[in-house]
Structures are given as C-alpha cells and as structure tokens.
Image (cartoon, rainbow, N blue to C red; front, side):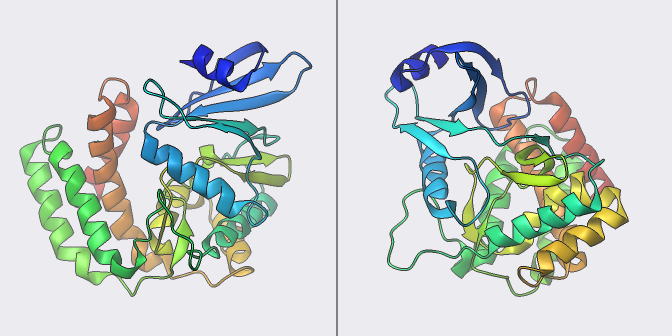
Length: 287
C-alpha cells in the first residue's frame, strides 16, 4: 500500500518508518533524498479521509497544524492519502514545562473558536451540536454492541445502568465548536519550550467542547496540578473554559467504554494494552 501511495505522489525516499502511536490511521515518516522529512498518512476509511481533508482546509491559518503538501483521493484499494509537512519536535509528555502547558491550552481554545462555516456544505465533518445529547447517546450505544462481547456481563450491565443514570446531569452544551475528539499528548507536537501544533483530524466534529478535554486530562493535566493550572490559564486567554469538574466524570466514563468498543472493532489482540487500560478505567469509575 505504501509503495502504491508513494508512486501516486511521485516520491523517492531514502528511508521510511511507521509511526507507532497512531491508533486510527497508518502513518509513515519518510526522509527524502535531500534530507527533508515528510509524513504520509493513510486514513482508515473514505469518511475519515474526507473529514481530515476538510479539517486542513478549515484550520489553515487559524490553528497550528502541518501543511497539506498533497492529497490523493484514493482508489478501490486505498481510501486516500495525505502528504504532510513535518511539525518540528516531539509529542507532548508529562515532563513539559508550565510554559508549554499554557500554550497547549491556548492551542486547544483556538481550535474551539472555529465554528461551522456559514453557507458551506460539509461532507465529512458533521455538525452534531444542535442535538448534542442525542449524538452522545448514539455514540455510546453504537459501541455498546461491541463492548458487550468483550467484557464481563455484570460489568456491561452496570455500565449501561450508570450511563442511563448520569446522562441527564450534563450542563447545557458549549459551542458549536470544532472539536478534535482525540486531543491527547501523542497528537500535540512540542519543540523545546514551544508548541509546534496539533495533528490527526480524522475523528473531528462540530459539537460541544465538553467532550474534548477527556484525553488531555487523562494523559497530561491530571498528572500535575501546576501543568493543569497553566493549561487552564492558556485556554482562558483565548476563550472561557467550562467547569471541567462537572463534565469530566461523565466523559471519562463514556470515553473508556467507547474505547473498549473501538478495540473490539479494530482487533483486541492488536490493541490489547489500550483495551486493558480502558477496562481498568471503566472498573474504577463504576467501583
């Protein structure tokens, strides 16, 4: 597949390395003959490909993202592919400074400022905001069909009961905003004390910002109070931050549940560690 895609782009590369922490798409870092690094991304499906394409067009000049160097619409064998510039640096880690955390917050808020374009039809990026509660419920129950096959029946039953109990406790949705849906350290690139930008837009929607803090909180903000405070200050410098204490318990639960279903769809064996991590989170929430 990669050889096929490289041929479509007319690329001759010196070396190729697959990017490991890419859950949805297949991503390759390619070094060209003159030493430049570029990335080839092959999304999982045509829909995800269309979402990503629309996201690059919409965010360009508004949010720090890679440059879209070329795009191939794909064929019967491949859903499509992107040729992307390199954001200098490495993925965000918990060892980042408060200065970086502040910039991450500002970056996230800048993305949430983006609203559905008036009068411009979108094919890939759905606007779920007008009926947000129904979207959350549909999303949850679509994964429930997969979750029930890979967890203990008692745990599954408990999870369903918990969802039905707490789904009415959410505040009014905050938006409509462009939401990443996978805003986590692996998708945020930093270069020293500067945030280079964010990547991976195959799951984006227009919706309520409340769902978009779960993963960055799980993998970064919850690990250090100082970083959490700096992130919130950065976010508030761009737009007001909602009360995360109110929404995070709900979305921490649904994210773990839905992630278990995602692992079932994509293959438990291939994603065993991610599966076990989310089962542990689900059990902790329901304990």
